[in-house]
Image 1 (cartoon, helix red, strand yellow):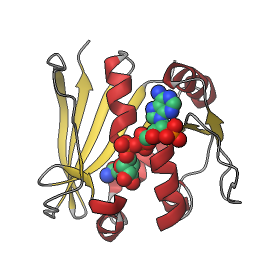
Image 2 (tube, helix red, strand yellow):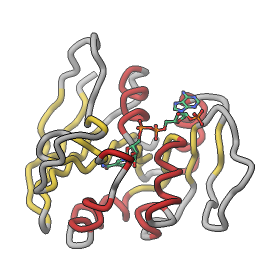
Image 3 (cartoon, helix red, strand yellow):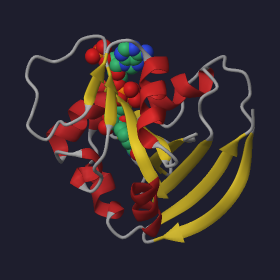
Length: 178
Ligand SMILES: NC(=O)c1ccc[n+]([C@@H]2O[C@H](COP(=O)([O-])OP(=O)(O)OC[C@H]3O[C@@H](n4cnc5c(N)ncnc54)[C@H](OP(=O)(O)O)[C@@H]3O)[C@@H](O)[C@H]2O)c1
């Protein structure tokens, strides 16, 4: 059964997107990371929210800027009326549980990747998240979308798997203890 992994790149001060969903700072550090390459190779299906999908569409069309191909599921309440040609995924309006179930079936023995903080938080709350790959980019953004923002959540314990450098990024790999 596929495991669920959140791959995220964060600034040193804990933001996953700059104000206005600006992701250009990531593209500057992204290309030289063996860990990014490994994540791309071992991800069999992806679940993301509509906002992440819209940023993928705006900034650099395609998933991982077009470097990843496979089945993916975009969770939303409303399917957009205009869909770009690169969008080969499936919009899911039946919630996160359904999206994860469908992604696990599609991923086979590879990972289900989560993109964006909101999906990861919902999956954590539902007990679906197995692993975190957190890559720290050498930048301070000062403002934007926080890496993790769940006030009142019960403590979630993690188990360290590895700490590595890959290109300009510093990588932390954890298991989620359940
Ligand atoms: N640094 C990184 O590694 C990284 C990676 C990926 C994304 N990002 C950035 O992170 C930001 C993503 O923001 P986010 O995580 O707050 O948003 P998100 O999960 O990408 O999107 C939120 C939207 O997803 C839909 N949604 C979420 N849960 C739902 C549910 N249970 N049922 C139905 N629809 C649901 C809703 O869309 P509707 O309003 O259409 O219903 C909601 O407004 C973006 O700026 C993105 O560029 C960063």
